[in-house]
Length: 167
Ligand SMILES: [Zn+2]
Image (cartoon, rainbow, N blue to C red; front, side, top):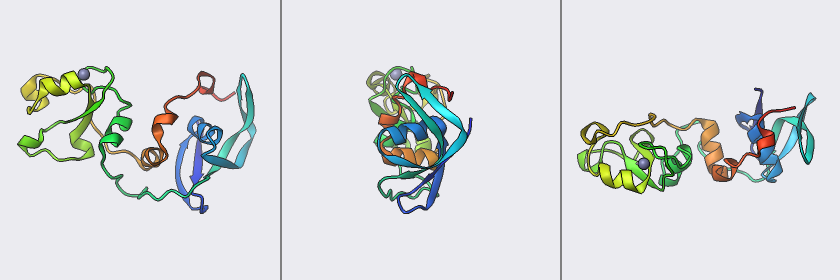
């Protein structure tokens, strides 16, 4: 899968995203196509457009893309796609892997999305102490993730089926 270069509204290169995400940003009027692949098109039921090679954001986004994204509860939920790290069901809360009571920090690597039940059950214990293994390890968002967080990645999760593959 080819990646698309994303420029800020100021034309400064920011990051790359997948072709699918680039098309969704354009369809949501969050970005415009600056350069398209001459031979590659994205086709769907109501759409047939050249695959964007370079897009430019419509509004200037001020985020420390090249450094660590600032931690936030919302960011953790978005990073984990609102899936509980313990059972995989829909998550509405953020759990500290090492509880704050045991010195755990508000950080990307120490927090995961969690359903309210599991968060309550785990309480002020580590996963080992609670016998609740993590389904996946928490991670720091990449610069591309950080940019999508800044743009509101929640909306981007709803990728139309027909955008699954470029035609
Ligand atoms: Zn759960």
